[in-house]
Length: 614
Image (cartoon, rainbow, N blue to C red; front, side, top):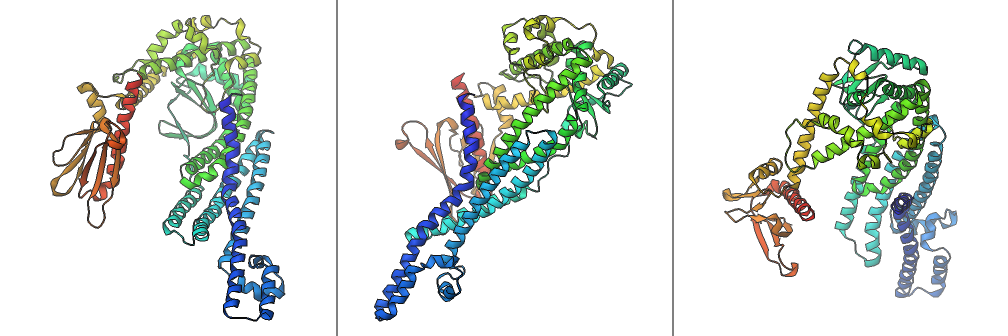
């Protein structure tokens, strides 16, 4: 366990405690500090009034004795009938003492509720380690409990925060600050809105994957083999076969969108590039492994669990970005971490069981060789794409990624990079966290030390199942063309953040994503923001982003113009020159101007930082 992991684990455990008990704890400290002082103030005020009105000692003594025996703040919780009149005077509904008493009660019960929920959370986390059915039950109960409780906590803690923002200043300074109360109220109300609105947000109905249907007429022998393997494993075959170019195989019973069509039921996804690398026996081992997940109920369990997980993640992310709502994010994150550990543990067990089933149905050697080849292909594809993404010039839409991988995979298998990658490589999978390849081999009795990895990868397969798919070449051509077009577009966009334009071609790329933006001002003036800097109105010289050390924006009032002050980045900040721009008529464009300036200046900073490093 490294230091960084331990540090993260401490945060995951401690932050929920802080966010659950900080505001209620502060409320309790404040009420316990303030109530005796309020009692003393009331007692002193009563005594002073007696002195001023010259009340005789005989009449004064019983009243003062009552105040000492039963401090005013204690009356709010004392239900004795003989104190009814006294209580009505001291603890008037909505009065000062009544508010302090209610705040104290609410804070106490909030702490109790937080402690109870923490215990339940840990119990639910423990249940998730028992078995798959218990895991699903744990999540469903945990999801409903924690999201509902987080919304409740934000309402209660928000109300306590608003109350504190008024009374802390009022108690210690005898003044209250409307702006402070207003800001806290707005933050609390927004947090409540985020939490409650998140309860009604729904995840996408289905995942969209890149691929195309392969019916039995397009691959009769492959379909026959899939059914045969399913029969050996004692499970029903998939209802449909999807072929794509992703570097993985998987099965699922969750809804999928493929080429715009919603598909439900049992689906098997096969990777055409990997089918060309694996021989038929190795592919059989991979297909048997995936079909074993059907037999084990893994796909049905995932289909039931995954929509809830997606919704849970959306809710957590909404809280994290919801200002004060982030108070409850850490509580949900604690449960998610515990559940993720349980899920990962179960996922490892499922993968090992599927590997053993495939080894029995096909062979341990087939599993071992397929793991080596898939791991090698995935590592080399990542290397090829990383190199292409690192290019400093734009690509056309035809990158030839598939051809580059095909030509370079065998030489790569004999390189030092390959040997290093094989020590820790994991086989890619879209739904599960697969165990390391070496562990999976050991589970089926194949020892990595006895395998010649370079020879396995570099030996061309004699026969592949890709050859049986009549539409394979056309499917690959379409999918690779679309993939490379997206890759080139994302790469070009990244170049816009890398370039400090040195020629017209680079300037054109930056201007494509950061074009000049004009803002109309009064009397026909215009302010322009472009990737180089700010072009002031009335024909002023360009102020380059690199020459701006700071920006101050002041909104005008009562008819005065907005002003923008730019500090010269050259020299010490305390002696820097400031340039003031008057923005008469910016009006409703004010916020858009700020957003554009922030984005364009950030681009320039990122490009300069990159140039300084490299």
